[in-house]
Amino acid sequence: MTTVTWAAPGRVNLIGEHTDYNGGFVLPLALPHRTTATVTARTDGRLLVRSAQRPGELAETTVADLGPSTAQTGQTAHGWAGYVLGVVWALREAGHSVGAGADVVVDGRVPEGAGLSSSAALECAVATALDDVLGLDLGRTELARLAQRAENEYVGVPSGIMDQMAAMLCAAGHALFLDCRSLAAEHVPLNPDRHGLIVLVVDTRAPHRLAGGEYADRRRSCEQAAAALGVPTLRDVPPAGLDAALARLADGTLRRRVRHVVTENQRVLDTVRLLRAGRAADIGPLLSASHASLREDFEVTTPHLDVAVHAALDAGALGARMTGGGFGGCALALVRTGAAEQVRSAVRQAYTEHGFDPPRFFAVTPSAGAHRTEAA
Image (cartoon, rainbow, N blue to C red; front, side, top):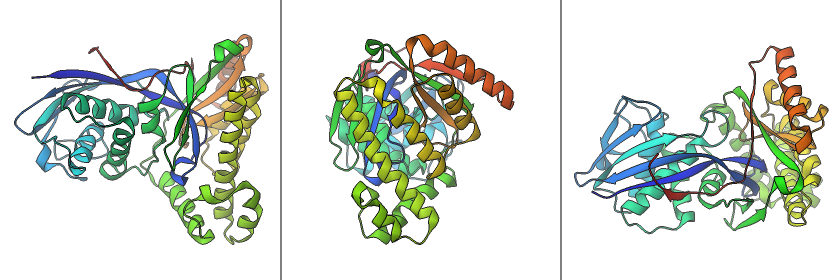
């Protein structure tokens, strides 16, 4: 039997939050943290799924029995195995030859529940490994779409395409400028060390959960606002037309959601322009403005996130914002190398004063997307 191992990374989104499912712009980068999937082809139609993080657990079914509410295997569609089974289901539904089955062993090193897209890393590691071992010869964008379908329709999380595209396409030393409507992608140079900078991630240790109602509610609100404005998505509201668009909406909540998406798209474009010009240190105010918008207009921050951002800025960070879907997870701060420990200490102290558990920190190194590797 043929066996292959593929790795796919988590991601941190430099800027561009809740714009992906609105057809807008995002700017993620891949983390060095990754998930591997070791896949062995079978011939009997069965799927056996194991995780290095959950020894003794086994999800077992057949390819033919997979359905969006499947996981009649001791798992649920929202459990860890659902992401693996969902990828196989999505491939099958798209007409690809996966019926012979596979053994899948995953090893996830992306922190779960931190808003770093551990789910997309898992999906994309499995998708690329299956593509390889079964000789499907699918492109990276098609695999990303199928991984997103697995998350949306099988697991039940209404996420956009950003996470899967980042896991598939990111390049070392670059951020991925992605148009979520056309899926046109550009690698924008991002070498913080070269500019004497650190992109410092603060894991608030307040887990985020996107399968709950809040995330879905934000997406519904955006869809309602787009329908009321007569546009396909909020991407189609130009910054110059924002005031006129807001005046047409009677609902204050919808107005706030629209204002965030439109201004956030422009902030992504402005950030890309600065990075192309080699002015990485100048993006700080855009990061901070993004956080303020996510706090005031999109209402997805939490006290843990707000305290981390406020403390980092007070300690000299050039900019700071929450990253990911919100409702917990991580913040990031752009800091000069010499100020990194000062920022860490300030955030720790602020967490102590608020009675929060101590946060965790790591500096981001823009890393590569999915690639074939050796089993860990």
